[in-house]
Length: 328
Ligand SMILES: [Zn+2]
Image (cartoon, rainbow, N blue to C red; front, side, top):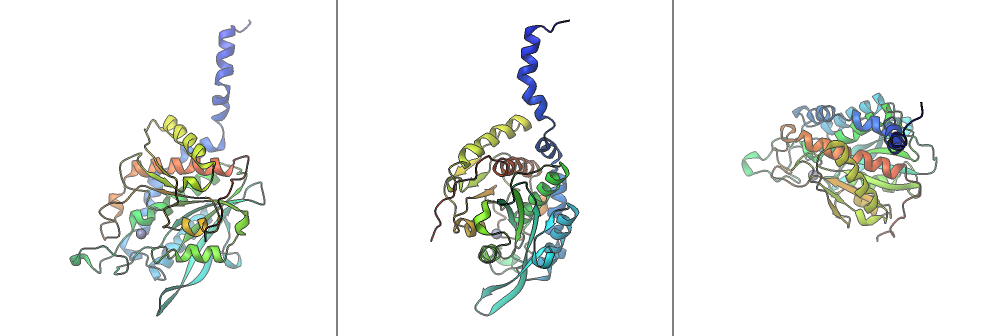
């Protein structure tokens, strides 16, 4: 029996879609779980960790939790002496220096020479007062920092899980970095770029997730789009793809300029194309009201899907991103 030409044409037209179903990045897209991410947020923002102030015991507990999760994902430990921590001394002010650590794990790609960084800061404000915007009657309370930035950490950990479990073989390596000391002025990321674990010339892009769990579903911001000529087209194709797959209408705001704040700034200063994913400010920002109960799971889900496909797009791109000139 011969196949009618129309049927033949239909199968031919559908072939890319049929083949694409089994791609590892389809498997990781489908496996992403905002409930797993929320579970991380609930722990990181719990009272036990007392707001994860830079150099505190609560912050160290958060770092240990992140390391244990990366180990369970079977990433490669990239810290000092074969461990997960990059230890550092951070100067908070003229009279205060603390011991702290960044956390680092690698998903190795086929290209030995290029790395894409996926990052989030895991410190927060403790009980203040530094950085606190609490009303006077709430001074001294724990600032749980669920959105800022347990949400970004949780999203990175969930991306690590699904990427490894899907069997994805990235072209470039993905270096997962979790920074200390962001709230005190990007101290962990500045330490990192002064003491990089992978040489900076091999670091082709940096994606930073900072405050990604609040706001209207599908409305979020991506800053730094102008730091590489290819970013705009890459992000637009990801936006269309996430809308097609999820049925959720996205309303991303693309900011061309690097906003100048956050850990992406440390990388941008070194001439590395850098993006900040962010779901916007809110009334609980830097107050004890930034709790896990206020995180919007559907928004976290939309943002994670967008960040996942952006990471894959940039990591598997044929050409290396063109870098912006280094900023003074
Ligand atoms: Zn903050």
